[in-house]
Image 1: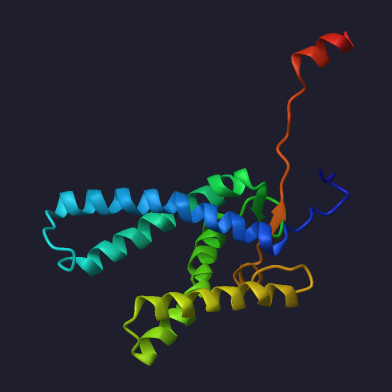
Image 2: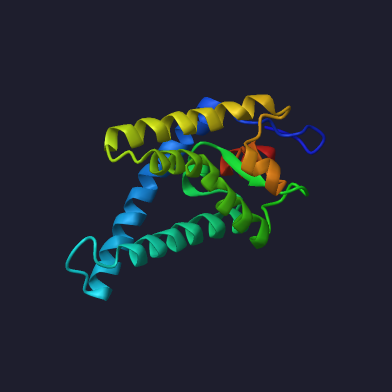
Length: 179
């Protein structure tokens, strides 16, 4: 646990990737529920009808999830599990604008690879997945070049991903023993 005089440590890349994987599991549920509600409310009968509206809705809902948790608590549910926290320059959870900028810039994980897939005209799901995973690995490795091992979107937004330890209240037994 860090004290105010000791700067918090930065989680390792593998820990961050494990948190990203867990975040994906949580997002699967959010995206599935969003798609179900969107389909029911718009009476969507075919997957390709209203596709862009569904994509925009999912983009907004996922943004509300991330920006809401980051700006309020500095962490999402997965980050809490993996004991990580996003902090701004003042060491507190980022303000709404900074959290929104971080969400938008975090798409740098995927956009270059997806753009490459589209520019190459690849239609194979396996090829798109391989290029996207390679792009994500490359993006994660770029963090190794930064002195404090922060990702590019954190550097651009002036946020930091740090190790977080929950504050544990004193137990009733230790309080009673102190009396």
